Amino acid sequence: VSQSRYELIFSLFQSHVAADPDTTYILTARPVGVKKPMIKWLEKHDIDIDPSKLIFLGNSAPNKKRDWIMNKVLEISAKKVIFWDDREKNVKAVQSLSDVKKYPDMQGIKVEGILV
Image 1 (cartoon, helix red, strand yellow):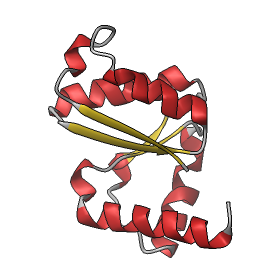
Image 2 (cartoon, helix red, strand yellow; image 1 turned 180 degrees about the horizontal axis):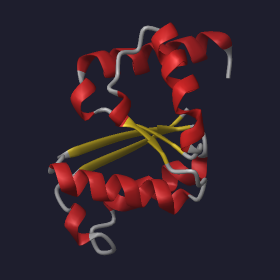
Image 3 (cartoon, helix red, strand yellow; image 1 turned 60 degrees about the horizontal axis):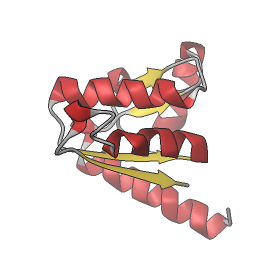
């Protein structure tokens, strides 16, 4: 990823968090032990997000992210998901939530996966 592309992606991320902090979550496969350094890094980059919106799965299996997102969407009655990830497997797993035959509870919920 070129520096300018990275900067664009990061700028879009910052804008999204600022515009909708209540329904924005940062979901990572990293363990909860990196929470404090992550909070410091976010603060350093002027990203103001409630620490309770930082989700540490401690597992890199794509189905873990997919399942967490599905459960959260259903819990909060969201109508749209925008998922950004740097692993194609994760993006595909989350995009699979659009398959209403497999995930009937997700009917009517727009799921957008973006590989960054």
